[in-house]
Amino acid sequence: MTCPRCGNVVEPSHRFCEECGLNLRQTRTPVGGPLGAAAACRGCGGDSFGPDGFCEQCGHVRPSGRDRMMADLGLVAGLSDRGRRRSRNEDSMACGVAFGAAGQPGPASAVVAVVCDGVASTERADSASQVAADQAADILLEAAAQSDFDAEAATSEAVAAAFEAVTELKRADESPSCTYVSAVVTGTEVTVGWLGDSRAYWIGDALQSEQLTTDDTVVSLLIAAGISEEDALNDPGAHALARWVGADAEEREPHVRTCSPAGSGVIVLCSDGLWNYLPTLGSLDAAVRADPRPPSQRSPSDLVDALVALALESGGHDNVTVVAVPFPIGDGGTT
Image 1 (cartoon, helix red, strand yellow):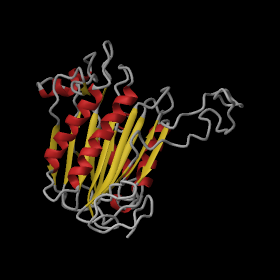
Image 2 (cartoon, rainbow, N blue to C red; image 1 turned 30 degrees about the horizontal axis):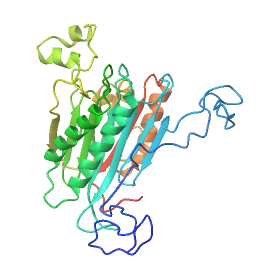
Image 3 (cartoon, rainbow, N blue to C red; image 1 turned 90 degrees about the vertical axis):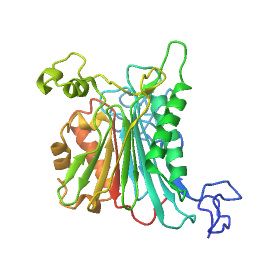
Image 4 (cartoon, rainbow, N blue to C red; image 1 turned 30 degrees about the vertical axis):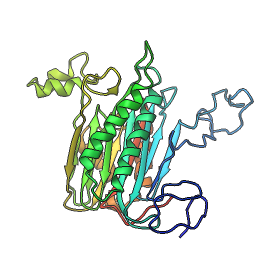
């Protein structure tokens, strides 16, 4: 077999390519995000930009590579879009496939996905979300390639690494922060971890669905304390985050849970740019099932494309990010 990056001959037992250093037991999105080509103007659709970086037809600034980021690794796909109202995309994602005892091509042992939503009220929220997603994905992928893999322990370690990376961005008067949600998907189990209000859902082919996360928001705390949902929603700070990833966060231990779905389906991770338009489990479930194919039989790239398009058509008031992982995972991915 050969290294998929440089073509050097490698042995199945090799963990890294001796020529270029590529980790042969995983494939993942690039560190820094799967930056888009950003070829078309978001104002008029034109592709002619002046040396000053503005569209020569309508004057809109040239989109950055973060405005629309797409990743398709075969077993997992994600799409992150700036939306129609925000000046930049502060959502981030990272995903990858871990392989077992042998390098590529070989059986996938786990699929990893991370979505982080930069807190808009903080400085450099886009940097915070991306370093958090990248650091967490690194920890999860490295752990998933080990024979003694413990997904829940790895998730806690991933969140700790995300905290450390975001804390390094802190300056005297700035504390960048973000939300966090991750999923580790194997052939038999799904382990999710989260802090904040980014969500994970299970959408089963056999009509059973579940929101796997609970929102770390003020409204959720009020309801948990016994206040009616109606009164809680009327609280002025109802939708403020109660927990997050950042140097100023008081609680750092993530929520972690593992489930064993009885059948096939798809895991969906998303930022609030999607669920603000599909706030209930039923509404998200209906949006996924608008396509007649069973959720697990759709390509993940097709599914995330459809859900992001729905958010944009509904107004696109916020950045929107969606990652999908069919369950159970297949035998291998593509680069």
